[in-house]
Length: 313
Image 1 (cartoon, rainbow, N blue to C red):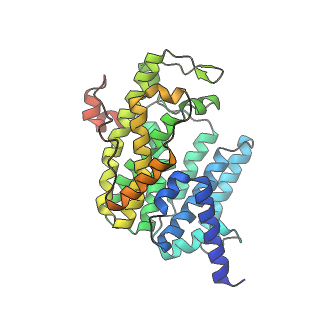
Image 2 (cartoon, rainbow, N blue to C red):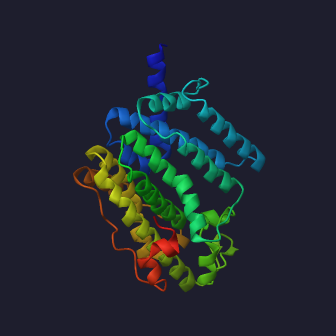
């Protein structure tokens, strides 16, 4: 097999991982032209590998060592990919496009926090985690898109925080069962929620849980409002890709805000036809569905002044 053939096979492997493991992500990535689509698939395949190690069942020390091994391998690119197809594709993409490879270090740092079982006392601490595990992907994507605007990085971070907060709300019970609690301890105390379990159910009074989830959904909505300002800075295909991915999660957030206790009854998701519709619509203009899910609540001024209260950019 020639070098070119081996590289094509490496990219195909990354695209297959993306199709198989990240259906929400793949709806957007399909909208990119071939070179950018292949490069973003390589970015995702590596991000997925890192995440799988962090969420795996190996002992803590083994997972930490494996994550550091991946970090070292990434630092060797593009000179040495070790014959690994994902590393080969990513190394090639990084030579063709201005991908900020250092962002993978932040992703690994976020996964190491998961492995250590880190919990977050304040909203600002949780924002750090969201920027590591989701904002980093946004910044890596900007490199694939070829965006040079100096303000784009902060907006990609903000959109990543909104996406990750949506994930956290969606997986509230599933994460708690595995021992993970992401929501700020300050907020749990504020709403009188202990997040104790009886089987796979949270025992907090439903009205308290509902108020807490609405509160966090409103906060996430503020991050979307900031992050979606990124779209006009992107070319049409890149904006469509981003709008499709963000639109799926944004619509999910709207459903959570409308029925906050639904997250305690099972894993929420959008039906495949709705996801496809969001992707198609993104081609004709970014999807703003879900705007307005932020609501005035007892935080009051915090919603209007997120810089002081919620670490917004």
